[in-house]
Amino acid sequence: MHTRHLVDGLSVAPQITLDDVAAAAAQGFRSLVSNRPDGEEPGQPTAAEVEAAARDAGLAFRWLPVTMPTLSQEEARAFATALEEMPGPTLAFCRTGTRSTALWALSQAGTRPTDEIVSTAAAAGYDLEGLRPRLDLGG
Image (tube, rainbow, N blue to C red; front, side, top):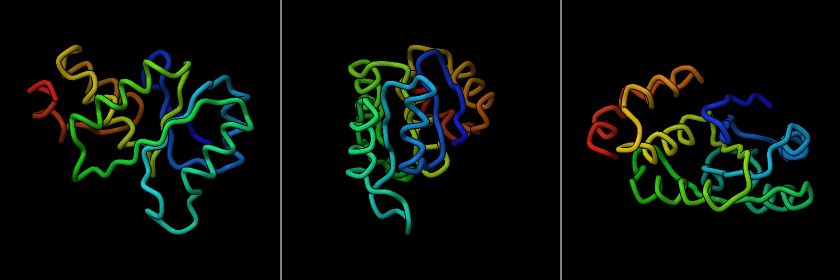
C-alpha cells in the first residue's frame, strides 16, 4: 500500500486491497474514506467489503463515491464533514488518489490560499493545476 501524506491527519492512496485495511490500522490510521464508486473497474473490492474489513480492523469507514467529471462542492463539503466527524488520522483512497486529493483541495478553497493547496497536492505527487480556477473562486 502506497500512501501519500497531504496534511496533518490526512493521507491519500490509490485503491487499497482488503489486506491493506489491516495494514492501514497497523500504520496508525483510525479512519478510511473510499471515494470510488463500486464497479468502477473489475477486481476492486466493493465499499461494503472494505467497510467490513475496516470494522474488523477497528477503523471508522465512510463511502463517498465521486467521479472527476461531476466532482461538486457539495461532495467536497461531505468529505470535509467526514474528516471532522471521524477519528484521525484518516486515509482516503480512490483509483489513483487524485479524486481524494481534489476533494480535500476543494474543501480547503476559500480557507487556504490556492497556491498553498496546489503546492501541497504537488508535494504529494498530484497535479491539481486544472482545479486552480475553481479553487480561486472558493470551490
